[in-house]
Amino acid sequence: MSTGTELPDTVETLDGDELADLLGDHVIDREEHLNAPAFVVRPDEVQATLRTLRDEAGFDHLSMVTAQDYEDRYESIYHLKKYDDPTQEVSVVVPTDPENPVSETAEPVYRTADWHEREAYDLVGVEYEGHPDLRRILLPETWQGHPMSSDYDQDRPQIVTLEEHKNPLQDDHRAGGQDTMFLNIGPHHPATHGVLHLKTALDGEQVADVEPDIGYLHRCEEQMAQNGTYRHQIMPYPDRWDYASAGLLNEWAYARVAEDLADIDVPEYAQVIRTMGAELCRIASHMLALGTFCLDVYGDFTAIFMYAMRDREKVQNILEDLTGQRMMFNYFRLGGVVWDLPEPREEFFDKTRDFLEDLPEALEEYHDLITSNEIFQVRTVGTGILEPETAKQYGVTGPVARASGIDYDLRRDDPYGYYDELDWDVVTEDGCDNYSRLLVRMREVEESAKIIEQCVDLLEDWPEEERDIQANVPRTLKPDADKEIYRSVEGAKGELGIYIRADGTDKPARFKIRSPSFSNLSALAEMSEGEYVPDLVATLGSLDVILGEVDR
Image (cartoon, rainbow, N blue to C red; front, side, top):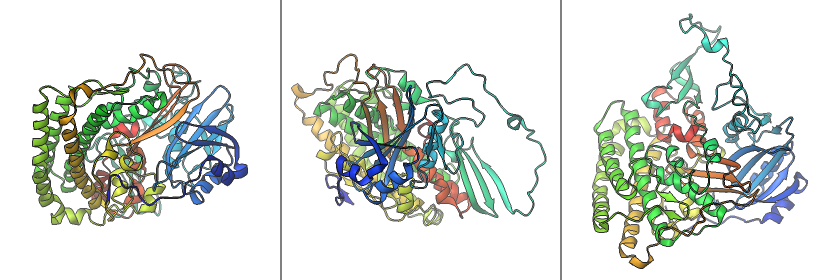
């Protein structure tokens, strides 16, 4: 473990000019995004450019891929970071012909580009040449048009092929010479943690291949955000991405990117409140993850699940006192929070402290029931292996990455809020398995409790005349046209980021959500091949995905 204010070993930093020299003739133009230098490359130079940045400049994390269209071109953007230092960022911009939007795939360089490019193709319409499996990922394969392209016709009739209406009672048959069996898991099954369909191929009793079929909960949240104003209408939506318990963490992702875009400073007092609320949400989320994971592993409605719900309920009560809501909080505002702590403040502090005082005993009970349980160990130790380099290739973040020994946490590595003023640790484990992922979350609950306790101490002693909860933000925000920015926070599941391009109006021209669950889930097949179906279920549970965040 390392302390919260201590950065990992430093890595070589190259500025924009040095990166331009490194890329040489690959670069045809330069841009300056608010977060990073950006290099424009030809659509047939994508792999060569990304491979140079990965191998020679150390950008080993493809954080975000997005696509958008202008009047004269389509554009793909690859946003790169370093796991050792995510403050080092660079964007690669790939323009394509509006009549023939074809660009070289990045999948051979970064495996995570597989799903991200499929989404860009599905929603915007850019085709990625050489992609191993360029199919729609959120919408049905029969869908007509690309909903987030400017020429999309909402009135165009949709077509369903006869294959979609084939007889479900038709006799099954075995293909000649094959010993595999196809097994559907979900989409309506408790073990899939929402409407997720796992197309599973079995060789005997072992998993030969598994393909997550997502999109059942797709609501086009990005399009809804693009139809809302920065100042007032977007903030209610983030609560609905990771809808289970992580609302304030989601809200902070939008607050951070919009505040940086509009150059808004948040009062220190509001930052402390935000930090406390976010960590309460992290505990609630991890408690839910713990309870449902044990439900998956043990296979029945155990006391562990009830205990976890009990402790999560205590956190929800505190969050309800703070925000007025139990789930869809809508508590953050650009520039701060909507209101101060509830009165009488002493009762709120006492209630929070009572929960924190009871937490160590509850966690010790969980360890007795779970981590030292022989059945649980047999089911989780050595299953769902995700090696560090594989995790990086898939853009895995959060507890899943830290359980594979990747020391990456944006609260420390790219500080925001009040985190860099507090004493806490980043938790990592080297087991790379299902057991390690649960252990990381349980230990992170302890660290979140340390953060909350320090925030309560600060808030309790804060001078009354200095309790500013919001900055003076203009009623209407209109960032300059063609301002582009990507910012992220450490969500409950990992790196939750948002890309925004402004067009000079009070609404974003492009709003892209980078959800951690999306990238984490894409690694499931890599983790499950050669294991048994119960191991597959345990591995899926250990990822702690929320389908509202996957599909958006």
